[in-house]
Image (tube, rainbow over all chains, first blue to last red):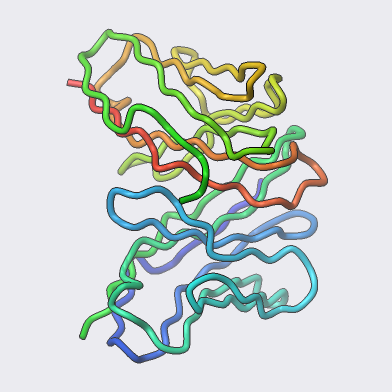
Length: 115
Length: 116
């Protein structure tokens, strides 16, 4: 079965500093990886995805993610954090088991950006 | 705004009752997915429909059922509700169906169900 792991429940970073939210994956076959963000009392918003090609994926709101096959990682990054980036971040992997197209999510990482 | 709509936003009901959650996908999307988000289980896939037919099933209880109608909206029916069914229920949609699909799932704002 496909799975992702987010090893950190919470990440704290000062505004203006670079941020990294970690994700590792375990898949059979090609990995299709996604990052979503959830703000309080809101739905999940799509940030970016890796399907194939360039290992550095650029997404919404200045976020990017680096796909590393040898380390089976897909870490989310941003060069300069904003207080408004504070939210819950989910890594996900597409799982086509059974012919469907479900997403299997990690446990989430709470990002807190402080002034 | 993802373009996926869900109603109602909040639902408070009692144990043993039955509720229906409704989802309208983005224009042009044929697949609808249902997910449950709870504190103890995290985000879990429940079921997927594609163009009216069930495509994949996850950890969905037998007390729960879903369907997708000809206009592509979907409903999730939860019956014999228990306290543990209290959760945030998300609907998502995407263009395609499965195996070879790499398209993105866009999520609605969710329905928060509270069972008292």
